[in-house]
Image (cartoon, rainbow, N blue to C red):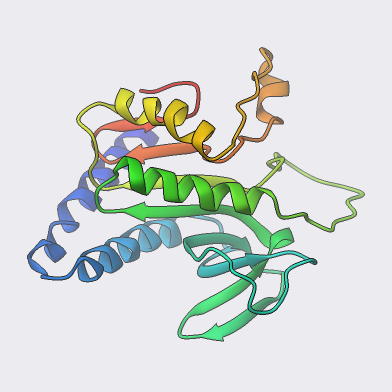
Length: 207
């Protein structure tokens, strides 16, 4: 049931993404496609999280400091946020669960930009004291790329990891062999890349 539903949603997203194709400006193509992903998330995520767009800050962030703007930020509702106007928010690192960069066409340059932004987000430092937790809590922000189109083979996307990470000074650590240890080991930058109707890649596997 779950797979059939997600397959249908994926086909729907690809279908409606063709609507902005006749636009003459890339922004007019990309913005509606971001909205389609946001609508999907709004309809499927639990009510204790919210979808936003903007920057992520920690206790050391300074005014006017250069920061990345993320297409989609999944954050907990019960935390405060900064309103910069125009729908752009500043999210406390403690509240952020995941970021998603939406690409109309995934290229190595777009992958590199998203990787750089994800690395910056992972270097922010939460200021939390936790006495109790329930369920799985990721060890760090989860960073994803969702693309409507991309290379013919997901193996090409996987090959970009070895090409881009060293150029950005990102060292890939050996993942633990046990499942329990592996899910508690944060990714260095990108957790997964999804290209609709083609597949997905993590830093270690593609399918």
